[in-house]
Image (cartoon, rainbow over all chains, first blue to last red; front, side):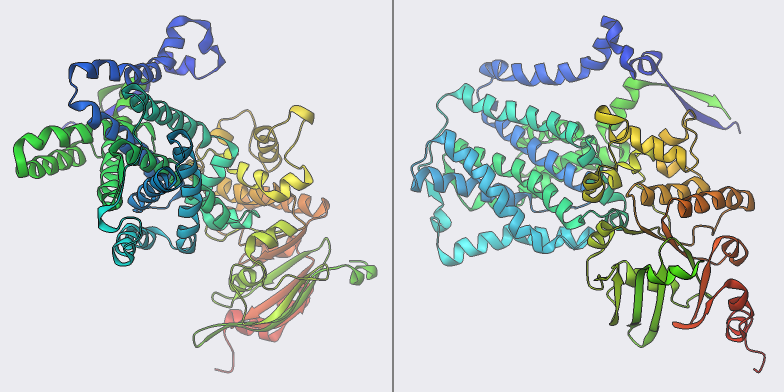
Length: 336
Length: 259
């Protein structure tokens, strides 16, 4: 039997545009900028189209929050080597803090969200710090406990509104502020993160994932780098949490729901780990899909699982890895 | 070795003992290393050579004993603090930063507080950046600048280059002492032959080298003094001709004749 092998060749335009010469023609600029512009413009005009389907407005906002969480998970898992299932904890801390600032301390919304983001990130980093020496699945399990613990503490002590949560949180002044607050920050975090992981400091953080012993032997504290990474990731998640609290005008125990830990992971699996933008695209698919399937009632879980399994079996590398390859390379079958 | 060298003890190890459960990995090991020399540590498999390096560089905490570097006690410091003082090491099991190109591997040590303090990363004047310095260091250690090798992913490099990359990672830190954990093992004769001048050049640059080796012949070509370990105990120390003729060293390598 003839053996066939898939040959992959970089497209000529990719080879040329890798250097500085990319700026020499519009076609090449477009080749580089095209996919990025498509994402940016597409996301920015999305709220305008939602006027046609008002029901989806809230879903889309939540979708962007999930994409932030997925981005944070992808960064921690594939660039730092920390598989963190504590996303729900970060979201909860951000949400509750923002509600406390807004309701108890009467701070306006444009102060409560930034304060909750920054202080929340500090708080989350401090609480996660003791488990940083753990690795792999152990870190994952311990961080999974954090949201569960937070729920129990609030229930048992009956603080912060207990099971009723904190009500009366300010909403956003306008619908479009609501949309663009999350969209703009999602884009900033996405492109900022892409840049960050290729800076020198980002390379050091990636070094921690590949070989933390060698990083230690190079005179750099691994704990410090991990702490920094957790701070960045929890910063994004706390922003998402604070946003949700103001979106629902309520901060309750459901902010610690494990959905916030699990769905981002599924998004990263679908989108392709380590691509960052894949995590975002993944949640763009998963969150609307799960909303769409509400129509089927409880049967939706089955369809949801089937879709996930399909992705894992057929495109285990992730959607974004596949698309990038198709964009940059020719593929053809050749005889061995 | 001049007589005056005795004054310049750069690192002094006193009575290092370490046991893992019931296994005594190191028993009361002491030695001094003079500034600028190449000091070899030999011994059969499992004699505690790598454990000794781990104890000195802070990766393992010794049960007792002291390590002093230029008079400062560094025994219980964490590894990154020890590296910050200028004591660095290679690893026996090479694990470069797989997901990064070879020259980007050097960004990690060049970013470190030590390199930033000494300004060692800022080559080529005001506009120099870490990438330039990284490629310079790789060229020094035997990567051809104009070839594709320095820009390839570190995981795709052959063993010889990965060993060099380990050394380059140490050099980038501008260290005073490098512990080399079996840099010659797994290399072909020709690769070793091209490695030896590098070792000699490091010595000429004033760096103290402490080399753990299995390849005795190659080690003896560069080492000034040698220490032999067996079952965690120091059994001999001195010039290689003395050590290799020592009865206990012969027994350790060839087995006791009395048995």
